[in-house]
Amino acid sequence: MTLKDSQNKAGGLSPIQTVPTSPSARNWRLNATKHATLISIHKTLVKGNKHWIAPSVNRLRELLYEFHGIDIGRRWCFQCLADLRTAGFVWRKKRPRRMPDNTVRSRPGLIGITLRGFAYLASKGTEKVKEARQKIIDWLHRGDHRFPGPSDILLEEETTERSTALARLQEMYAKIGAGPAGGRTPAAT
Image 1 (cartoon, rainbow, N blue to C red):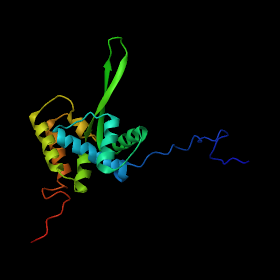
Image 2 (cartoon, one colour):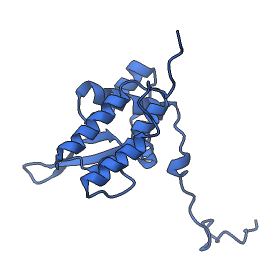
Image 3 (cartoon, rainbow, N blue to C red):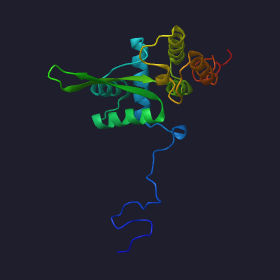
Image 4 (cartoon, helix red, strand yellow):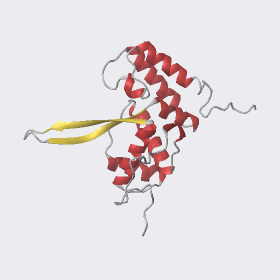
């Protein structure tokens, strides 16, 4: 049994090797389960008329099975959410709560879609993406400083000025346009 020069005796990486990483967010591709998870989150956001939701993982799995016919386990659901967050399509916020006996318990975290996620959904022709975009813009115009902040919606940069956030929104959605969802014009009749 011989060892390669690039491995150490324990079979690990040498000091000059790096740990493989996931693909960059720019080249990210979603499989059917992750796409269905993003669609389910979006539809729940639209139905609830909010820019964040707090579903349990079991409820998210039920939605995937009911509307998409996808039956997955809890662990894979958590992994799909983590991959969507890594790709920059969703944001999450943990919500710990302190119990009377001074222990800490966790409630379902808040989940929302970022502008990059809305741009992805718009490129796929998803319904009501433009209405959700308009709600985010209206929320930024109001100057509401409660959670979530502009830095949660615009993940790529830290925004402190409202005008910077609005300029970033306009730049990001200039690619989508004001036409029908999917970016195509309807056929002439």
